[in-house]
Length: 95
Image (cartoon, rainbow, N blue to C red; front, side, top):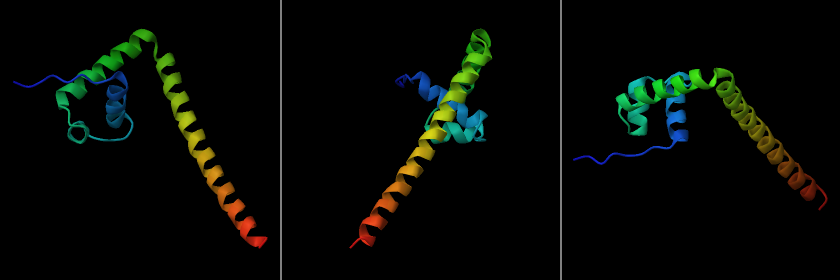
């Protein structure tokens, strides 16, 4: 008898994103995440149905906001690392 697992909504969204945006095949994504292909298919349909009901603009704008924030976070980390290196360089240059 197998124990049924419960996955968070965020996990399901990211799992479906592997297929729809990252180019993973259904089989690859399922194996990588340790879930069945049937579960991924059901999650994709469920999320698509929810998007259709809520209006895809709301879902797209949320996804776009997440992507924008991730890109901003990446840029800010890069700027921070550059400033750290510059600070170390000038601190060593003064001695």
